Length: 298
Image (cartoon, rainbow, N blue to C red; front, side):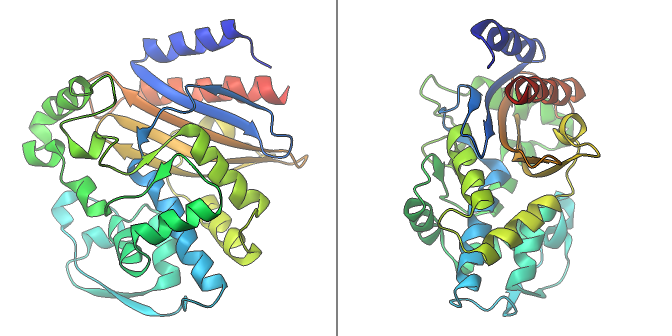
């Protein structure tokens, strides 16, 4: 197990890249874990799509919903640059099951909001409560994530939006930007999200059909730039969901080794550098997770 000196070194390395982070690396089968600030509530960004997808798949599995049922999705705004239906210029009809796929594999905000129209946030929270998952809160639609100072100021003033995101945080994690205010936005803790991943992989209170389908979508996640380069290999499969918003850079998933061992890995981070593109921050986060996983597994 890592000692406090190693954890301090990892914190220092993250700080050197301009990051504050909450990290959990957990052996799903033994329960052993290493963690850094695991219980700090953090704006979830797109990680909140995972519990929504789970609630929908639970209802498909028990027959309350028909996965083939067609749902009308309104057109998006191609100028916003969001993936999937957000770029559509015309209304579309998509089956419920395929909306889940779009929401998880390409992080389609429009698809996720269509799912929330079927299974509202209160129902998602009730499902989490039944499963004993704490530290995950779903409160609002994902259209709200496209209405931040970054969109209002425009690309030439992106640094101003990031500066506001960085400097606006209060000691109690409040924020004038509502998408970053933990009392108003969708939130997660690293520990709570690791519990959710563990429930999905161990099928604890979740029907196999729903769990298998969600694992399939997480394996199909197309965003592979953050932690995958440090975790995936020929004998280790990485299934995950990313979350990115203003100065937030998250990724959470499960690393499955060829020997059968499985590790839930959650990395939630906030940058203190007012820039949109930060490869050094991505690299530092991946390196920290790789080191913690290697120590726990070794």
